[in-house]
Length: 294
Image 1 (spheres, rainbow, N blue to C red):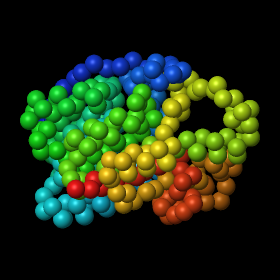
Image 2: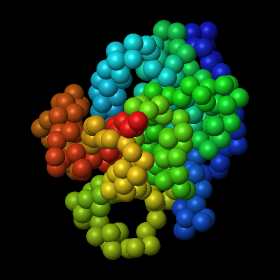
Image 3: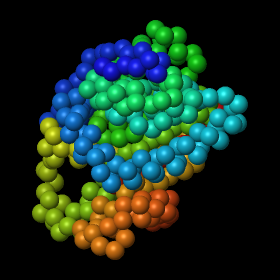
Image 4: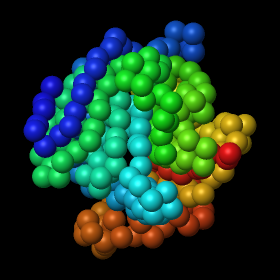
């Protein structure tokens, strides 16, 4: 693990799950860890324009609202990032003066996140927990943080890698303040179908037994549809205040011409159409910002 005098940090560890290789049934599924392919994850997800688009949309959605919440509360926020991976957004929130707890099941992923945090000139108040999110209550209770709860919880690209994704909603209920905000970003299964339709991969779509190689592949075999997530949010009394699509057209353009050759123009247009119907629902990932009703 990396540490820096600039970062107020405490790291705790827990059991780290091994990567699951495309299990066939829910009873056999386990929560996915990217510990063994952390370098591949960093390069594949954030090594190019795809990652820049992803972060641009999340920054706009989250930073605008967190600034409003901070002004309303009159204090910095308490933020929890669950299944944080490289934790870019959470680290930037810490740099803005918020108190942040960052969690991931993978020690290697959080080591990369800590190295990134150590490069920040601003003092950061970050606590790190290496463990499955299900073990977080014991960690937070030990630190006497459970009673304080969180104003903002981030959960990005985690649902599709959980064996029981619906179960994380109970965790959010336990640790999110009334009227707090939940930032959910998840893989959009409709985008998988749409992209393969465009690419002419009809044989793949006709193959009901198709599974991505989840030893190294970053395409989830068990994504959660938008409609199901919305059902969970309604059942748990959350009110959606913002929804966006991440990469609503970039991934669907096999021929890079015109504006596609200008990364800044691509990001500008992705931001423009990310919140517009019907384009946002074509995003490879969807971002939903919701508040918990009192």
